[in-house]
Length: 186
View 1 (tube, rainbow, N blue to C red):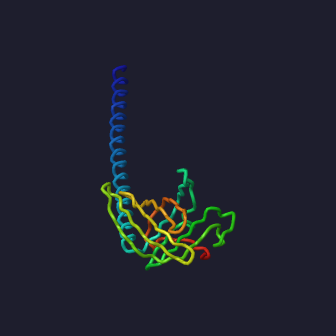
View 2: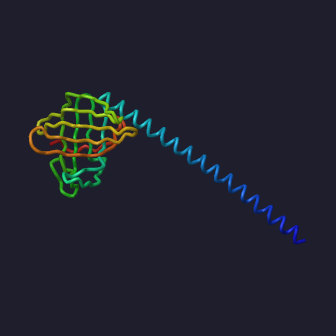
View 3: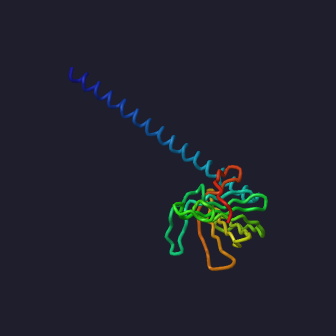
């Protein structure tokens, strides 16, 4: 009787171990599949960002703002952006929504024209774009660096007249997918 119980116990343990090993194998397969899908999604977003930048019809939603001393802060992407379409650009920067600014949202909104667009690919795989933006109250150069395998971009805005320089990080989207909130123009 003891032998039968020991044999049954050993059989149950063996079945449990076999089931556990197949669970581990399926979990590995599921992780590999999820990783592959994430890579495909990032690749498609990257290609869409390149296409939008090349066509000159894009919006970059800023979600991080880098201070001059290197510190960064998170900002609202829906209301902080650079949007370009058909040779026109809208630059909106809202740093303090509690204090209503010139655009009634707590910052500045600039209606600009776009000129002097150039593109260069770096040896590390990222892509640099340079745009000249001019308007009634602002003239600046936008240096856009698109990351190697995603739609994340770093944007440096350098004022042509004056010492102002802003550095943002954000997501590049085609203009039609932007969903932005534009304030009153300065």
